[in-house]
Length: 150
Image 1 (cartoon, rainbow, N blue to C red):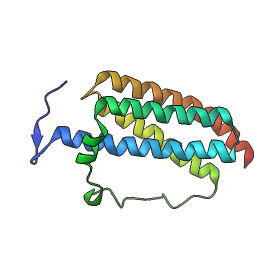
Image 2 (image 1 turned 180 degrees about the vertical axis):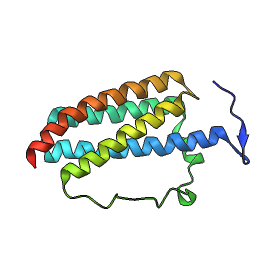
Image 3 (image 1 turned 90 degrees about the vertical axis):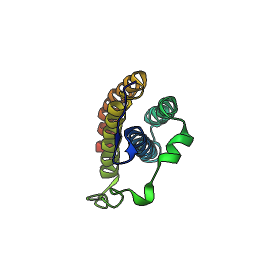
Image 4 (image 1 turned 90 degrees about the horizontal axis):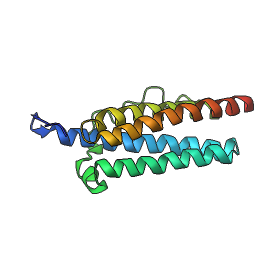
């Protein structure tokens, strides 16, 4: 583990915890939306199970990096400077748009988790990377299915 210096009175380790917490939440939320599309729109058991399995693996990897109680203690949702940045989040035309926005959120969050986990637990970082590549494959397969519906 690398030595983390203090910056602006708040340790970098706490800031990394906040980044990891935010991205664990974001990736699981995005996966849940994709899972619901797979389950209720595509009526596809395989994709539903794959999204659910990835969510559970993320929980497991996240728990290896930081205990949930520690992440909660570092969370500052009410004062988060990015809380109201929502450009484009209200512009959805159909289920395909919802799916694409959320699968993109999943990939981006997995990348952030991969990068910042390198500072805490390299094994977890490799796990997030592996999941990111799995999401690329599921995205490709499920996109074909959802595109054929619209």
